[in-house]
Amino acid sequence: MTTAEIVTQIHKKKSFLCIGLDVDLNKIPDFLLEKEDPIFEFNKAIIDATHHLCVAYKPNTAFYEAYGIKGWKSLEKTINYINKNHPEIFTIADAKRGDIGNTSTMYAKAFFDDLSFDSVTVAPYMGKDSVEPFLAFENKHTILLALTSNAGAFDFQTKEIDGKEVYKHVLETSKSWKNSKNLMYVVGATKAEYLADIRNIIPDSFLLVPGVGAQGGNLQEVCKYGMNNQVGLLINSSRGIIYASKDADFAEVAAKKAEELQIQMAEILG
Image (tube, rainbow, N blue to C red; front, side, top):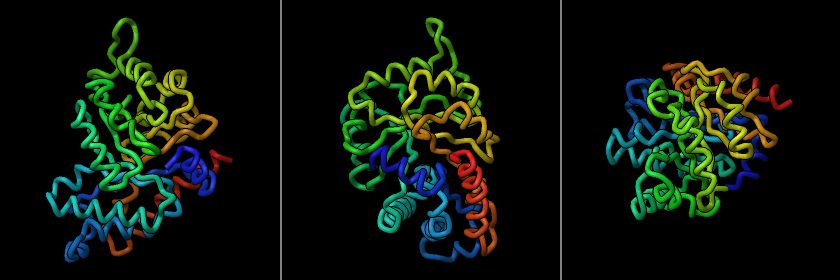
Protein backbone atom coordinates (compact mmCIF):
# COMPACT_ATOMS: atom_id res chain seq x y z
CA MET A 1 0.00 0.00 0.00
CA THR A 2 1.32 3.44 -0.91
CA THR A 3 1.36 6.46 1.36
CA ALA A 4 -1.02 8.22 -1.03
CA GLU A 5 -3.54 5.40 -0.59
CA ILE A 6 -3.33 5.76 3.19
CA VAL A 7 -3.94 9.50 2.91
CA THR A 8 -6.96 8.87 0.66
CA GLN A 9 -8.48 6.56 3.27
CA ILE A 10 -7.83 9.07 6.05
CA HIS A 11 -9.81 11.75 4.24
CA LYS A 12 -12.52 9.34 3.10
CA LYS A 13 -13.16 8.01 6.60
CA LYS A 14 -12.32 11.25 8.42
CA SER A 15 -10.11 9.13 10.63
CA PHE A 16 -6.46 8.37 11.26
CA LEU A 17 -7.24 5.73 13.86
CA CYS A 18 -5.23 2.53 14.16
CA ILE A 19 -6.72 -0.23 16.31
CA GLY A 20 -4.34 -2.57 18.08
CA LEU A 21 -5.44 -6.21 18.00
CA ASP A 22 -3.58 -7.43 21.10
CA VAL A 23 -5.58 -10.47 22.14
CA ASP A 24 -5.19 -11.78 25.68
CA LEU A 25 -7.38 -14.82 26.32
CA ASN A 26 -7.74 -13.74 29.96
CA LYS A 27 -9.45 -10.52 28.87
CA ILE A 28 -11.82 -11.56 26.10
CA PRO A 29 -15.47 -12.52 26.78
CA ASP A 30 -15.74 -15.97 28.34
CA PHE A 31 -18.22 -17.30 25.78
CA LEU A 32 -15.61 -16.96 23.04
CA LEU A 33 -13.34 -19.44 24.82
CA GLU A 34 -15.73 -22.18 23.73
CA LYS A 35 -14.97 -21.44 20.06
CA GLU A 36 -12.46 -23.46 18.06
CA ASP A 37 -10.34 -20.33 17.53
CA PRO A 38 -11.30 -17.73 20.16
CA ILE A 39 -8.53 -15.32 19.15
CA PHE A 40 -9.72 -15.11 15.56
CA GLU A 41 -13.37 -14.97 16.55
CA PHE A 42 -12.61 -12.04 18.85
CA ASN A 43 -10.63 -10.24 16.14
CA LYS A 44 -13.28 -10.90 13.49
CA ALA A 45 -15.99 -9.39 15.69
CA ILE A 46 -13.86 -6.31 16.42
CA ILE A 47 -12.98 -5.87 12.74
CA ASP A 48 -16.60 -6.28 11.60
CA ALA A 49 -17.69 -3.64 14.11
CA THR A 50 -14.92 -1.07 13.59
CA HIS A 51 -13.56 -1.29 10.03
CA HIS A 52 -15.48 1.83 8.91
CA LEU A 53 -13.98 3.87 11.77
CA CYS A 54 -10.27 3.16 11.35
CA VAL A 55 -7.63 3.17 8.63
CA ALA A 56 -5.24 0.63 10.17
CA TYR A 57 -5.08 -2.49 12.32
CA LYS A 58 -2.00 -3.40 14.34
CA PRO A 59 -1.70 -6.90 15.80
CA ASN A 60 1.17 -7.12 18.28
CA THR A 61 2.70 -10.47 17.36
CA ALA A 62 3.69 -11.29 20.96
CA PHE A 63 0.02 -11.84 21.79
CA TYR A 64 -0.10 -14.54 19.11
CA GLU A 65 3.33 -16.10 19.53
CA ALA A 66 2.53 -16.64 23.22
CA TYR A 67 -0.01 -19.31 22.18
CA GLY A 68 2.39 -21.22 19.94
CA ILE A 69 1.39 -22.51 16.52
CA LYS A 70 -2.31 -22.00 17.29
CA GLY A 71 -1.68 -18.34 17.98
CA TRP A 72 0.32 -17.93 14.78
CA LYS A 73 -2.52 -19.56 12.83
CA SER A 74 -4.92 -17.09 14.45
CA LEU A 75 -2.70 -14.22 13.32
CA GLU A 76 -2.62 -15.64 9.78
CA LYS A 77 -6.40 -15.96 9.70
CA THR A 78 -6.78 -12.42 11.05
CA ILE A 79 -4.55 -10.79 8.44
CA ASN A 80 -6.12 -12.84 5.67
CA TYR A 81 -9.58 -11.75 6.82
CA ILE A 82 -8.59 -8.08 6.77
CA ASN A 83 -6.88 -8.31 3.38
CA LYS A 84 -9.81 -10.16 1.80
CA ASN A 85 -12.66 -8.11 3.23
CA HIS A 86 -11.06 -4.70 3.81
CA PRO A 87 -8.04 -4.39 1.49
CA GLU A 88 -8.13 -0.60 1.84
CA ILE A 89 -7.06 -0.87 5.49
CA PHE A 90 -3.35 -0.51 6.30
CA THR A 91 -1.96 -3.42 8.29
CA ILE A 92 0.92 -3.28 10.76
CA ALA A 93 2.77 -6.27 12.15
CA ASP A 94 3.93 -4.94 15.50
CA ALA A 95 6.83 -7.36 15.76
CA LYS A 96 9.74 -5.05 16.67
CA ARG A 97 12.20 -7.15 14.71
CA GLY A 98 15.77 -6.20 13.87
CA ASP A 99 18.83 -8.27 13.01
CA ILE A 100 21.58 -8.11 10.42
CA GLY A 101 21.71 -9.24 6.82
CA ASN A 102 19.89 -12.39 5.78
CA THR A 103 18.10 -12.67 9.11
CA SER A 104 16.31 -9.36 8.55
CA THR A 105 15.51 -10.43 5.00
CA MET A 106 13.85 -13.57 6.37
CA TYR A 107 11.89 -11.56 8.94
CA ALA A 108 10.75 -9.26 6.14
CA LYS A 109 9.71 -12.21 3.98
CA ALA A 110 7.72 -13.66 6.88
CA PHE A 111 5.62 -10.55 7.34
CA PHE A 112 5.56 -9.08 3.83
CA ASP A 113 5.47 -12.14 1.58
CA ASP A 114 3.98 -14.93 3.69
CA LEU A 115 1.51 -12.95 5.81
CA SER A 116 1.07 -10.01 3.40
CA PHE A 117 1.24 -7.25 6.00
CA ASP A 118 1.70 -3.72 4.67
CA SER A 119 4.26 -2.83 7.32
CA VAL A 120 6.30 -4.09 10.25
CA THR A 121 7.84 -2.38 13.27
CA VAL A 122 11.63 -2.61 13.49
CA ALA A 123 14.18 -1.72 16.16
CA PRO A 124 17.06 0.52 14.93
CA TYR A 125 19.72 -0.46 17.48
CA MET A 126 21.78 -2.60 15.07
CA GLY A 127 21.89 0.07 12.37
CA LYS A 128 21.26 0.29 8.65
CA ASP A 129 22.17 -3.27 7.64
CA SER A 130 19.48 -4.51 10.01
CA VAL A 131 16.83 -2.19 8.53
CA GLU A 132 17.60 -1.89 4.83
CA PRO A 133 16.50 -5.49 4.07
CA PHE A 134 12.99 -4.49 5.18
CA LEU A 135 13.15 -1.29 3.13
CA ALA A 136 13.93 -3.25 -0.04
CA PHE A 137 10.32 -4.44 -0.35
CA GLU A 138 8.32 -2.31 -2.78
CA ASN A 139 5.16 -0.64 -1.44
CA LYS A 140 5.86 -2.01 2.03
CA HIS A 141 6.65 0.18 5.00
CA THR A 142 9.18 -0.19 7.79
CA ILE A 143 8.11 1.52 11.01
CA LEU A 144 11.22 2.39 12.97
CA LEU A 145 11.15 2.74 16.76
CA ALA A 146 12.17 6.34 17.37
CA LEU A 147 10.79 7.61 20.68
CA THR A 148 8.59 5.14 22.49
CA SER A 149 5.86 5.73 25.09
CA ASN A 150 7.25 3.53 27.88
CA ALA A 151 9.08 4.81 30.97
CA GLY A 152 12.27 3.04 29.93
CA ALA A 153 12.52 5.25 26.84
CA PHE A 154 14.51 7.64 29.02
CA ASP A 155 17.19 4.98 29.63
CA PHE A 156 18.67 5.45 26.16
CA GLN A 157 16.48 7.29 23.67
CA THR A 158 16.68 10.73 25.26
CA LYS A 159 20.33 10.53 26.37
CA GLU A 160 22.62 13.01 24.66
CA ILE A 161 25.59 12.11 22.48
CA ASP A 162 27.62 15.06 21.21
CA GLY A 163 24.90 17.40 22.43
CA LYS A 164 22.04 15.63 20.66
CA GLU A 165 19.55 13.05 21.93
CA VAL A 166 19.91 9.50 20.67
CA TYR A 167 16.45 9.45 19.11
CA LYS A 168 17.42 12.46 16.98
CA HIS A 169 20.56 10.64 15.81
CA VAL A 170 18.31 7.71 14.84
CA LEU A 171 15.95 9.94 12.88
CA GLU A 172 18.70 11.82 11.06
CA THR A 173 20.79 8.76 10.27
CA SER A 174 17.82 6.74 9.00
CA LYS A 175 17.14 9.35 6.32
CA SER A 176 20.38 8.32 4.58
CA TRP A 177 19.45 4.64 4.31
CA LYS A 178 18.54 3.09 0.98
CA ASN A 179 14.80 3.37 0.23
CA SER A 180 14.28 5.52 3.33
CA LYS A 181 11.12 6.82 1.60
CA ASN A 182 9.55 3.58 2.89
CA LEU A 183 10.20 4.53 6.52
CA MET A 184 7.62 5.46 9.10
CA TYR A 185 8.41 6.05 12.77
CA VAL A 186 7.00 5.13 16.17
CA VAL A 187 6.61 8.14 18.46
CA GLY A 188 4.70 7.65 21.70
CA ALA A 189 1.75 9.91 22.46
CA THR A 190 3.10 10.40 25.98
CA LYS A 191 6.07 12.18 24.36
CA ALA A 192 3.95 14.79 22.55
CA GLU A 193 6.21 17.65 23.65
CA TYR A 194 9.00 16.18 21.51
CA LEU A 195 6.97 16.16 18.31
CA ALA A 196 7.90 19.65 17.15
CA ASP A 197 11.59 18.73 17.13
CA ILE A 198 10.81 15.42 15.46
CA ARG A 199 8.89 17.16 12.69
CA ASN A 200 11.86 19.46 12.07
CA ILE A 201 13.89 16.35 11.22
CA ILE A 202 11.26 14.25 9.39
CA PRO A 203 8.58 16.69 8.24
CA ASP A 204 7.01 14.41 5.64
CA SER A 205 7.05 10.97 7.25
CA PHE A 206 4.12 9.14 8.78
CA LEU A 207 4.25 8.62 12.54
CA LEU A 208 2.66 5.68 14.31
CA VAL A 209 1.61 7.07 17.67
CA PRO A 210 0.70 4.61 20.43
CA GLY A 211 -0.30 5.67 23.91
CA VAL A 212 -3.59 7.53 23.31
CA GLY A 213 -6.22 6.14 25.65
CA ALA A 214 -5.11 3.66 28.31
CA GLN A 215 -1.59 5.13 28.50
CA GLY A 216 -2.86 8.69 28.88
CA GLY A 217 -1.64 10.36 25.68
CA ASN A 218 -3.54 13.46 24.54
CA LEU A 219 -4.89 13.38 20.97
CA GLN A 220 -5.12 17.16 20.60
CA GLU A 221 -1.53 17.69 21.76
CA VAL A 222 -0.24 15.01 19.39
CA CYS A 223 -2.07 16.56 16.46
CA LYS A 224 -1.00 20.10 17.34
CA TYR A 225 2.69 19.25 17.13
CA GLY A 226 2.75 16.13 14.96
CA MET A 227 0.33 16.64 12.07
CA ASN A 228 1.73 17.57 8.67
CA ASN A 229 0.12 18.55 5.36
CA GLN A 230 -0.71 14.89 4.63
CA VAL A 231 -1.96 14.36 8.20
CA GLY A 232 1.06 12.10 8.72
CA LEU A 233 -0.30 10.39 11.83
CA LEU A 234 -1.66 6.97 12.68
CA ILE A 235 -2.99 7.15 16.22
CA ASN A 236 -3.13 3.73 17.85
CA SER A 237 -5.48 2.64 20.59
CA SER A 238 -5.62 -0.97 21.75
CA ARG A 239 -6.89 -1.76 25.25
CA GLY A 240 -9.12 1.30 25.43
CA ILE A 241 -11.12 -0.01 22.46
CA ILE A 242 -10.97 -3.78 22.29
CA TYR A 243 -11.37 -4.42 26.03
CA ALA A 244 -14.05 -1.82 26.70
CA SER A 245 -16.44 -4.66 27.56
CA LYS A 246 -16.38 -8.40 28.34
CA ASP A 247 -20.10 -8.81 27.73
CA ALA A 248 -21.84 -10.30 24.70
CA ASP A 249 -21.98 -6.84 23.08
CA PHE A 250 -18.21 -6.33 23.39
CA ALA A 251 -17.80 -5.55 19.68
CA GLU A 252 -20.53 -2.90 19.70
CA VAL A 253 -19.01 -1.29 22.79
CA ALA A 254 -15.59 -1.35 21.10
CA ALA A 255 -17.11 0.37 18.08
CA LYS A 256 -18.53 3.11 20.32
CA LYS A 257 -15.09 3.70 21.83
CA ALA A 258 -13.53 3.79 18.37
CA GLU A 259 -16.21 6.19 17.19
CA GLU A 260 -15.45 8.56 20.07
CA LEU A 261 -11.89 8.89 18.77
CA GLN A 262 -13.00 9.02 15.13
CA ILE A 263 -15.37 11.92 15.88
CA GLN A 264 -12.53 13.85 17.51
CA MET A 265 -10.34 13.13 14.50
CA ALA A 266 -13.02 14.30 12.08
CA GLU A 267 -13.24 17.59 13.97
CA ILE A 268 -9.46 18.01 13.82
CA LEU A 269 -9.42 17.24 10.09
CA GLY A 270 -12.18 19.81 9.54
